[in-house]
Image 1 (cartoon, rainbow over the protein chains, first blue to last red):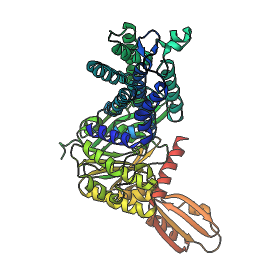
Image 2 (tube, rainbow over the protein chains, first blue to last red):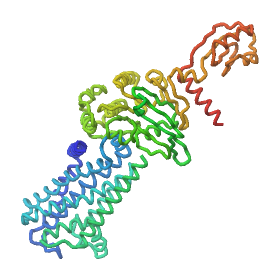
Image 3 (cartoon, chains in turn brown, green):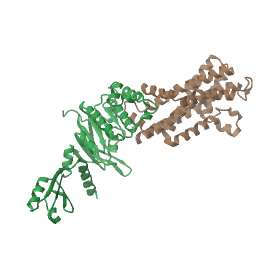
Image 4 (cartoon, each protein chain N blue to C red):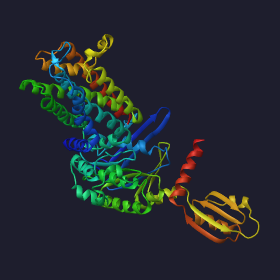
Length: 246
Length: 303
């Protein structure tokens, strides 16, 4: 299975477009959004400056991109093209394919998180304690598994032409409504009520709790855990259905 | 030898989709070292048979055993290499990278360079998989199927998309595989391939095994030799119909074409009628005609 992970990774690292959108683009977006903000204005109700707040949002956004975008479309295509069938004729265990995809996404999402941090610290003077940097990296990285599972589920749910629009809608919907592009506090109340139940909102809130040096809200943890269970369970169910059909 | 389990054993295997019986009570056994062609028109159940054989589909009833174990166990043990018509390739990687992956995944792998050159794609090693022609992609699939020392090679329509030259080169490569003592099973609808390459031909029709034997036996089973001749004067069709061992008769003008299960006896009786056939020709049926004869006979029975 390691050889498949290696090959998936080689392929991901060779794909410039994918690398740009998952690794470079979040940092660029961070600079555009936080670029003109001074380092004293706080995001209402958080006690965090805009650059500090947006750093976590953009790191989460980058990890989301790497985990979700790469896999869903490829899985759908490779299912349709028969590569998944061909792999079933090898010694690779059934789950190996999905695990290799998830592992390679995880390798790409790590630099996308770290680069946002480096840019935020260097350009916008974001300062945190050492434990906070480490905890942020760990939490955002681990949290991206939720969206990797979602990517796999979408890849097994949709086929061919449908997978791209479905992934795009999910991706932009989750990013925007979850408050990854702007603080949800700027949303009207009714939208805030929806946003706080989205896994992306809980995901970014986890990082912001670390920045505020406080324990995360229980609701956010529950939303993340339930989302993961839902997405991973859905992916497993769809995977089994697909295997029987093939 | 009776103690060794057959390479492939189907026992009363059936598989249906909705109301269509794709495979219907199939029983067969393949022995080590055989090169077997699975022959049948489109929709005969060839692909389903191979899917069942490889464990990609589960039979509704009956059992499929490979080397005495289930298909998945045989694959995990590295005893089976397979190339599917519907088998895709991973794109955005090079041919060499893909072949290396296949070698890495095989329990008894060959060296990737060896696999590439044996499949005749050494010169394509650096090419991206998505930039291959249909025939080249087929050879890459073949390389994946032969990445290791498997005992059984399964090929589904392996020469689809190849031109004549590539096709010949491909079969030469495949014969090498067979000469190494492997069992090779391939599905095809090119009858000349089955005729030229296979030691044994299985004819599948509507999910059932219609014939099982050497190409020569299949041809014989179809009834058959062709006898043709010209007659002077008027042709008495009724008299010709009375000829022994006759299976079909066609008269056009003064030319008579006959199919007979015993051409010698038929021709002898022809002289016995006092006729004097000219331009007499007796020839065997090609496998193609034999195949058509067997399947149409079956269609007629079904009606």
